[in-house]
Image 1 (cartoon, rainbow, N blue to C red):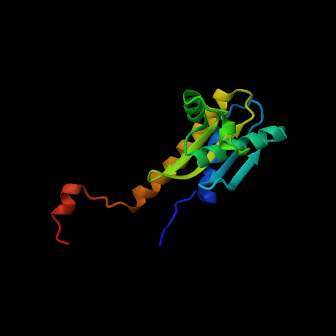
Image 2 (cartoon, helix red, strand yellow):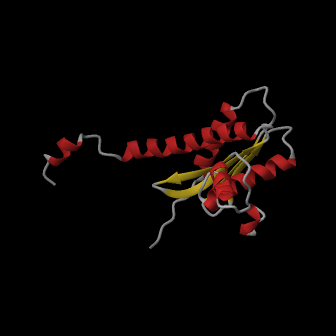
Image 3 (cartoon, one colour):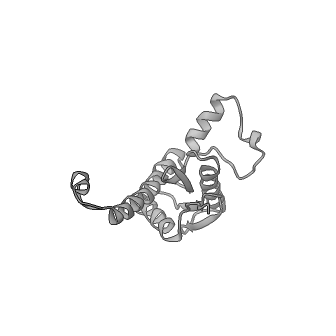
Amino acid sequence: MIQQLSIGLADARAAVEAVLKAARSREAPLAVAVVDGNGNLVYQVRQDGAGPLDVRDAERKAYTAAYIGRDTSMWRLQIRHDGRTVADWANPMLTTLHGGWTLRRASAVIGGLGVAGSGNEERDEQLALKGAEAAAQLAVDEWRKKRDPRRIRDRSAVPA
């Protein structure tokens, strides 16, 4: 049976909360979206005052990061280097706007996170990174709970 890792609702909420916590109170209202590895929306938040374009851009950034498997800023650099444009993919959901981060577990794409609305693409990207880091930390914490706490040297000395 083939199993595919995917971001769950609890992890998506934690990632969004990390973004909102990292945002400064004087910044413009944000829209934050998290999608699964197939680009389907898992969780989205729109702060009061965030516009409909911000909501759509956050979702497109998250979708692109998951669909392409690269953060949107890196994908922009790649397609520019290759002499291509977003139109080459014939997918209206794709974007090269900064602020989309790919979420991974065990090297597999489990989703994407997008932030829009700060008024600055670089700031959107910084905030999205905070959410991606929070999601990654959840995976580390989960691994720590499951691992054998004994040192490797001590494990080999115990008969199986």
